[in-house]
Image (tube, rainbow, N blue to C red; front, side):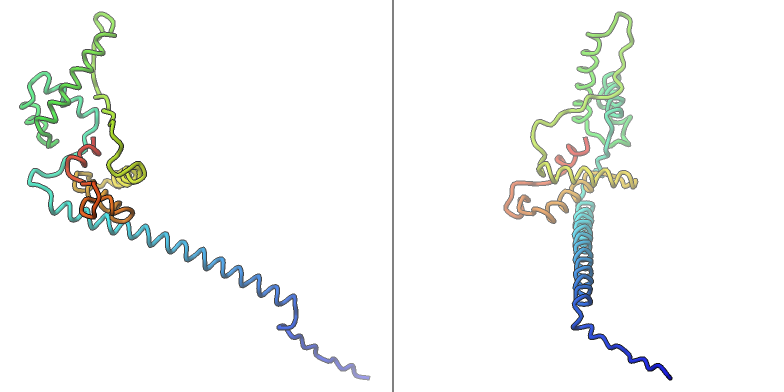
Length: 209
């Protein structure tokens, strides 16, 4: 006697277990889509800031003076220049270190700081001890950063990142980066948008010191 098998038809729409599974999968894909959207948003924001900075850097490079870039000089290099100026005179120091592109007024300040540091060290030195000032002390800025703590910190991080990529850092790069940050995050601080902040060469030099 033959055995006849009757196929069983399951209504998946009516089956509660299948419905629950479908809802769970829907939530999963919805969450994944939301996460992907957030990542794309962050990526777009980062790219937007980079483009803003690049645009402002280009403007600053085009508008820089004939004197050229103000180079970032370490405290050790400043001490060498100051020592030379103390021993040979400020004008000769400017000519000797012409590749550093420094002004006489700047060297005069370094020379003064060098000689002050030299006197202080001599006071505490033992008789006959050789005194060497191989680095000028860092001048502490009393006023808060022009961009504010948050954006100044971002500026410093971006400059460090550029240096790590061997990008030459001068005043035009600093000004362009600073303007890019404010135009992206808080343009109302800029004077041209009704604020009180003007990012000029003197400010950029103070950042590089």
